[in-house]
Length: 263
Image (cartoon, rainbow, N blue to C red):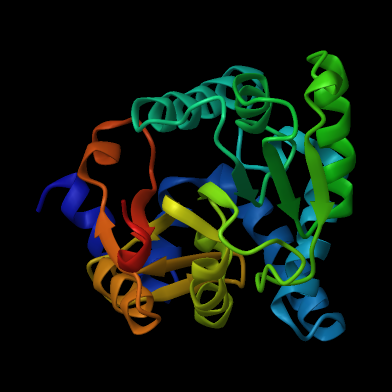
């Protein structure tokens, strides 16, 4: 079995996998135990997933805002943001487009999108007030205040405060990888209302070709077919983005469009 096949079929929530991982990576046992204890505490105090993950982000952001969005260091933070930006640029992102960035975080990619788009063209939302405070600092550090981006906290993914048929590009990087099925379904049920004619919704996810599972309540692994079927249930067209697989990123990507709005 190849390393890639093994990665796509392993169940990271199983006891066997956790034991093998601990034996291979003894230095990571301590951090995992701390995450497990935090998970237990937050489960008792936050019943719904959004509140739970907001508390996770507050905990992570207090230590390091860049690490809170999955970047080990400044170099990786910049590289992952550049990768997202260049991918969408290659897929036709234009300065005049209007973009919704779901889970914008501390603008790892967002500052590049803001710089590329016309003033007011970028709308970033996140569930974490702590990470949005960090985003505002990044915005100021990059001297992008004149671009007038929108940075807004949200409680859910119904997009009920956003206008109909408004966004040319909707983007969710490393959001569904931390979301249970009901949160993803909510987003797919409502994104069609805000997509402009010819627009698309790109999202990344942690892919498995084995049993769907999650680790604690922070990392969720889905089959491609499950997410495509979920989108099609809401009248959307979804396709796996093969060209994204060529990039040095651990997650996969799906693009969603509204067939009735394609030019």
